[in-house]
Length: 433
Image (tube, rainbow, N blue to C red; front, top):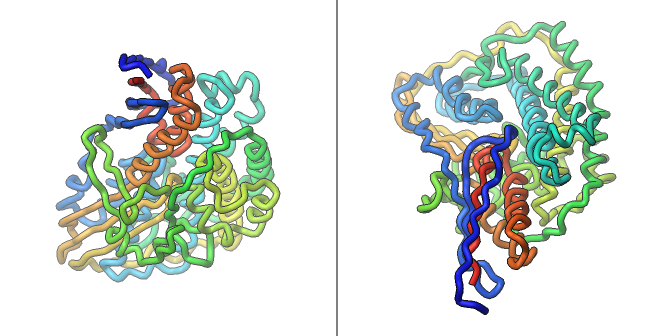
């Protein structure tokens, strides 16, 4: 082994399908990684501070601006937490339509990630546009599914990006029955397309990448979790949402502006594969049958099965939305009245990328005096670094730098659209001794 240190800098060209900036630095000796840092340069958002002093009625619209891909998740976790403080019982209609609202976000987010962010990596293309030249039908199908998800979000939120229809207690307005019937018909017609996507994804030659890691997701035992459930983990953890912070700790690391979260001291996974590993038994019957045909065997220890899990969740979301909208009626009032009061409340829902936990304190007038938000991005950070370490070592650190860089990007993008965006400009530095 040479004592000479070799440093190689590799820049990935700027691509239109991603945004943000990140870097991966690897120190290796004797064919093993001695240090690995996934640098995330997202600037501090300060949203928790922005919320302090705001009235409860402003929170849903404010937190929707945190993410352009999963604004519904931020809204639903926030209103759930505030309603727990005020003792609001939103009623069956609101609960059902919130689940439909959430189905729209899963469909659009998963379709976006599969077709525009992840698949080009698996097939060796620089972009979805390049991939579309060889797979035009598949890419068009993905865009149709994404568009349907956007329409479903706009049906209840008035618009798909940063929707404004949600409020504490329910929705500002209820959609017209004719609009619901029209969209429901097109959602039902798209179910075979989602099935075809899942069967196609099941045939991909995914890397054999078995790893051991805990999974964490909501679970309620009755339906596939979106906006209700207890905090459950593959470790046996099963606690109320209010006890999430007793087991999940966040820490700052010098090389990243994103927190690293640990579950009882260990890196862990949230997101589609974690949900599937913990909740496959409560998938809609049609999706459960599709899972039986396509796999993977559960619980899966291969993080690359997240792509297939996303495809299966698109199918599940379509089936659920069609079912729930089949009984649609315009209510007398699409929200429950709210009487603000002082207190502390907690909310947790399943964003497309995993559990999103909120905690709020309010004063007597319902003004926010303290807020804490733990997004899935932070929860997956430590797991991503561990996955990178295991995946690069399994490939062999004597591989060409281009190959290691490509593998590193593929591992990162596999987790989360936001992280994919943040790391698309990947500057990989490998120090070998």
